[in-house]
Length: 129
Figure 1: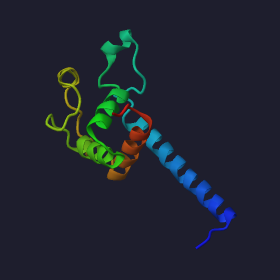
Figure 2: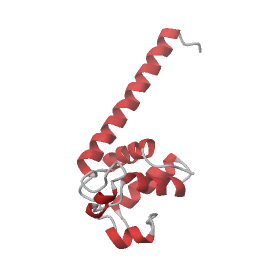
Figure 3: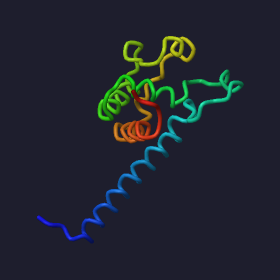
Figure 4: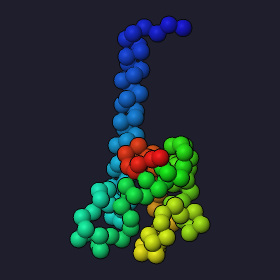
C-alpha cells in the first residue's frame, strides 16, 4: 500500500498533535496533583530545608536508573504511587528517613491520570543510565 504524500503528512501532524496533547495533560495533572510536594527544579541550598518531598528530577533519575524502558518505568510509577512501600522505594535511605514514604494516591488519581503523569515525567525529567 502506497500512501499519498499529503496523507502521510497529515498522519504525522496528527500524531504530533496527539503526543503534544498527552504531554500537556501530564504536565497539567502534575501541576495539580504533584507539584505541591515535588518541585520541578533543583532547589537552591537555602530552599532545601523547606522541601516536603524529593525534587522530581532526582526521583525520576532513580526510576530511570532502575527501570530499563519507559514501559517498565511507567508501570513502576503507577504501582508505587497507589501502593508505596519501603521495599519498592528506589530513593536513597536518607530520603525516606527525611521525607517518609509518599502517601498513597488512591482516591486522588485515576489510573489514566497516573499514567499520563508517569509518561510526562519519564519524557521530561531525570537522567538515565
